Amino acid sequence: MHVKKQFVALVVMAFAGLLMTGRLSAQNSASQIHFIDYQRSIPKIGEMLRRKEDTLMKQFREKGLAWPARYVYIRSFKYDSQLEVWIKNTKEERYRLFKTYKICALAGTLGPKRLAGDYQVPEGFYYINEFNPRSEYHLSLGLNYPNASDRILSDSLAPGKDIYIHGSCVTTGCIPITDGQIEELYILAAHAKDMGEDFIPVHIFPVNFNNAKSVDYLNKYLQTFSEYTPFARSMRSAFYYFEKYREVPFVMVNGRGEYVTEEVSPNEAQVKIPNVEPVVVATPVVRKTPAPPRPVRVNPIPEDKLARSVDHLPVYPGGNEAFQDFLNKLGKEEVKDLDAGQTKAFIMVEYVIDEGGKPVYAKVIRGGNDGLNTKIEDAFLGMPHWSPAAHSGVHVPIRLKQTVMIGIN
Image 1 (cartoon, rainbow, N blue to C red):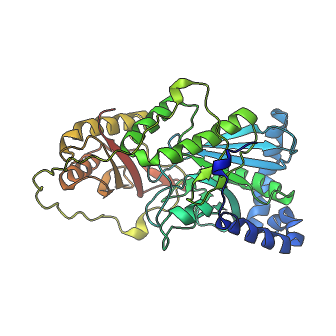
Image 2 (tube, rainbow, N blue to C red; image 1 turned 45 degrees about the vertical axis):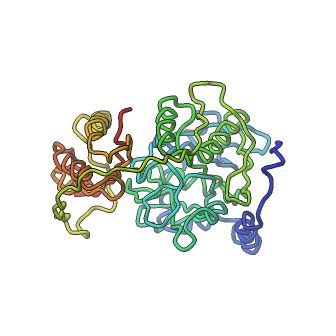
Image 3 (tube, rainbow, N blue to C red; image 1 turned 180 degrees about the horizontal axis):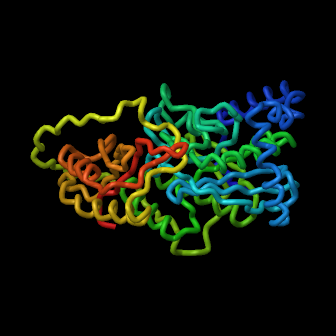
């Protein structure tokens, strides 16, 4: 692979984490030779392996794949709520898709994570650095966030931490899948690690760049947040490198914390990211007359009564498409309440659906203005009853987060 020379300046920091992990890996290599045996010795994992391994082996045989996979590569797409699992057994092989999982809950919006508590799922290039069989979210696989790029570009004091792929379908910045899916992924990753793949790559993209509708949404997002364009372009190049070669791209970090990859462009013109450049507008922002003080709203359900894990999430009447229609309609209706001179905004709402499916609490936690946020909260509180969440066959209340795009699509 050839990377343009002007982009190959690396900072020592980019390799510090990798080198440190490498030293630790060498020190512990003896114990890692039989990593899968160690996992079997944990009662919860041993039972899971006995229950799931034969099914996975059958699925591999049906797809003509050799069991177990020596190399695992994970791609996640935030906007599309998908997680792909790719596998191969030799370095010379091209990766083959084993399975695509549905990410069952999402926090935040497009863009990388830059601050603790911002509810953002990271975007970028990571690897699995932890197997946690005792996770409160059933099982979890930890990611090396913050990585070399994040340590340069994120908040220096509080960049955030503890990012996992886990079960239980609940998130405030992680990647949740179902319990059955995390069991499969945990087993695949454990076998790969046992056979020597110490750094199982996990690449988190803003969108699936092969999905024209998703890229269209990204393009609209970039019109408002043009500073995100270079980052999105580097993610796109890495995505299409894998699409072209079916090999994990080599990624570096330059002195500015930017990802550097070989530039690979899509063949389809309709999914091209526009060359949006930041524009400084000299026109002063004129705000509307301040709205009356907002009423104080308190979540009526105590924190310890809210479900932290569920078997299935609540469902809006008519399903996800109907919920998206509600969000789109709300986004168009509330354009009138944007500040003067503003045409678009991304609002994050936290809301609670009780055990009967009733929306009982809504609060805007990012974006907007007082008048707009009150309208958004009222709209969420006025939603019809949902099919409630359930855990172990019992309906439970749950807190969710949702981003609403205000503007004309």
